[in-house]
Length: 516
Image 1 (spheres, rainbow, N blue to C red):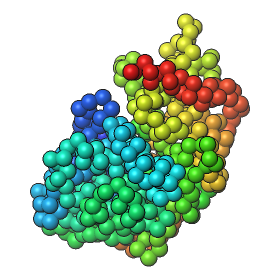
Image 2 (cartoon, helix red, strand yellow):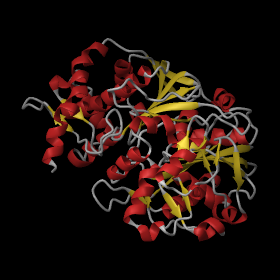
Image 3 (cartoon, rainbow, N blue to C red):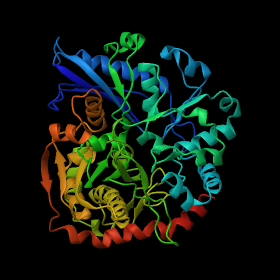
Image 4 (cartoon, helix red, strand yellow):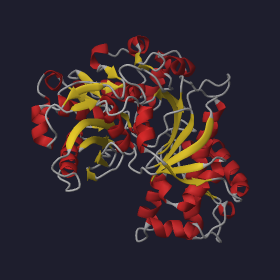
């Protein structure tokens, strides 16, 4: 039996899975690692932890009795958290990947220390609007380039040794194959990539003073980028010589894994962060009329390209604390309760929460407000509000932010006919219906729940010539499951949603001045 392996380097764990050519998933495994938070607003991880977890997860999948002795790995696909900064020296670049180690822990996608660097990038690129025109995105703290400039400015002893910059999944590629490479999707999240041309932006690189030689070649997501080395085969149990494709960031790979690979379809993912992802056949940039902030949305390359057909773009918006907000409430206020208990309690409260609104900006915000100083909380508490009101307000607040992002996607001319949903929030009937009500669109779940790792495996199948295109791969493996239309409660959210949208602009100056 030919199988395809998908590996997803997440924020909390590596997930590995095997699929067959019908899309069945006979085996999955994961291995976790710590999140480092040396200061408030800082988030880092040691890339060595990703590799150790990858070895553990892949070995567990390959050892599964469900695969059987006749199973052969036809290809490996990679996915991972985007924007992280893996900094390698000349030894890691030029020698065996076996002992390649990062010069320092990687700064992650949700690290918020780089506000000053973002302002500098904006000036260097000729303003926020010019930045969006040039690289498809505004300079925000989540992206890779601000992290590079922070290390350059604050840790010059480290920066002087940097010979190569990789994203998280690409460090795993290096360890597996010995090859330095990335894909066009992850490269789009650096602020150094021309998304129109699907190539590194010489102008952006020159303007910010980064050495072009630090950046790896960028491939299409289904293109073959290397083969498993003899050393990596001994470490992981993978067959020596198995192909490894470009893969992509978790958003792009998750869209493939949900079948969102054609215009009109959107993926709404409620994980730690919340992501609205819309496929587009041409690059659509967030360039509103003068007077409106540009770059609220991100324009990137989708994971639908091959080495023969360089195509597919996407528009995304990210709210940084989605299901992560509910996790925080459970951990800090109701640690003895399960998530099912919290959701059951929330279902006892009427839409709108009797005037209680929750702002979900617990780790700053990226969209709809690009503001690392944004802060969250409940607004409108009274003595008659209960624990159930507080929980439901959190779920509503997150979904209000997601709906606000979807409105921005529509505003730049991206067609939206239906929303496919994923992440932990998709497991709750309450949350699924709330999304249909607030998006005003059909909300659909599919037969696949494995997200980016599943998409990475499909990309491996295209690279291995199991399928001729990413679209064919999704048609062969993905089916719609549940379909929910907006219900009679949809109009009841209007007032609460309006208040949620207006609150942060109204209180921002008060909150930021109080922080000094």
